[in-house]
Image 1 (cartoon, rainbow, N blue to C red):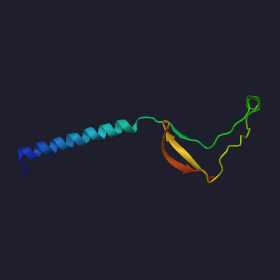
Image 2 (spheres, rainbow, N blue to C red):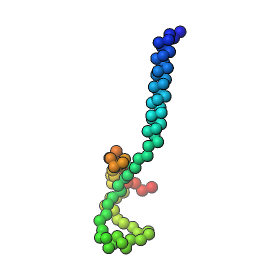
Image 3 (cartoon, rainbow, N blue to C red):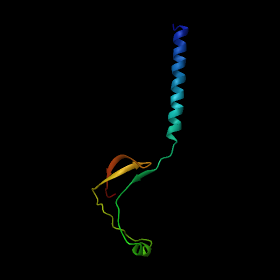
Image 4 (spheres, helix red, strand yellow):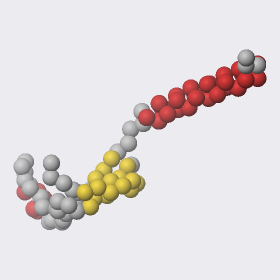
Length: 84
């Protein structure tokens, strides 16, 4: 049979687990910005002003190239450009 000390320790451990679960739940609700830079292009403003809906801008990366994945501006990983 468990003595009072064991019961108190179990209760404290259970309370700590509930507290941690609450903190994890709160952290899981935080929004972050995820960015994958697929490439860049350079053009004159005059050309930029001519761009309309459906225009294609050629970037400096290709299928198979590596891209950097960022979370709130900080690099967190790398990915690969693929055709889906």
